[in-house]
Image (cartoon, rainbow, N blue to C red; front, side, top):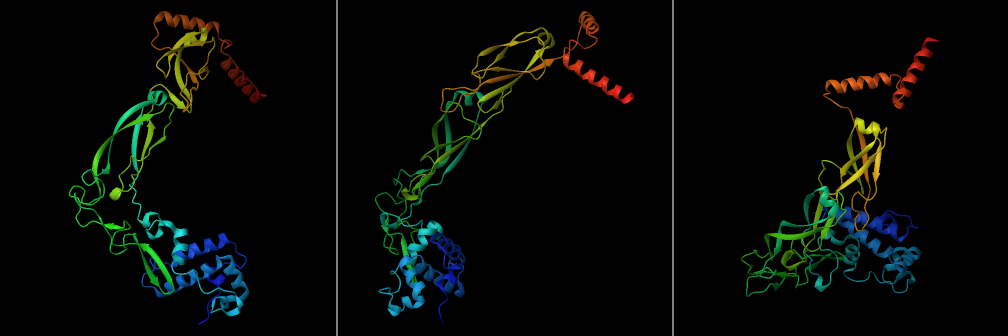
Length: 381
């Protein structure tokens, strides 16, 4: 049976660049990989064909020879290809596949130190709620995190005191094994030691051979001034301990800022709605308002203040993260109508109402009713 054209195998044009070849190979390799198609001889054959094609076309010299002589360039010195004798040796496919797929096969790619698996501990998440005042000023807080820590009895190696893990007899201590599949050699994580390169004949009684145990760990967390809702703080190496001496994961603290009874935050600024007595709004005056730093601020209210008017207090807002600056505070006036008036108060207001019957002292009302009058006049014309 004649071989298929390598470009057809990968489903690319002859003008395809290196990135196009790599993408096409990656997609098809995932589709036809034997681990995804157990006992499927057709998929296995396509997988071998695919790797053979990519091995040639990814190499500029081999590709040039193939473009000139076709498959004859790799058949027993035919076609005058000048020294292309098959592929680059056993293990070539493993190099290709691991380079592009990393941990797809569970091996995590090539590693130093004999190829042993780097069983890093899991990252952890801790949710913390803080007040707006704490977000403004920052704080230090002690937290308790349920996690896995290195077993002190065996010092994390998983073996019983007085013993040591032994080199895995299946992989010879390298953590990976090779299997011949026809023309190709495929390298995989050792199934006996799971990539560790060592096995434990006599496990530690405290950790059961895992090298780690469950504990509640107390940590001190520094919350910087100016943090916002949703801020994430990373504590490197404070996650779960790795399996059998592997490196620990990280701890991520997710902050949420509780709603405040007086203030609403808007980035570095603070909004505050303040009720203003009707008389103060009409005649003018001053009021005192609290600030987020625990102090008080005096606000001058000009005569004729209306609901919705804003007054800005510079530098009275939130702290800015990693800065000495502060935002501003905005006071929104809400003019309050008096209630439960006594007889004298009612008389005074009635006198005031008579004096200002044309709404001339209330510019917004005056303008509105003027427009209403003009509207009805237009209807009667």
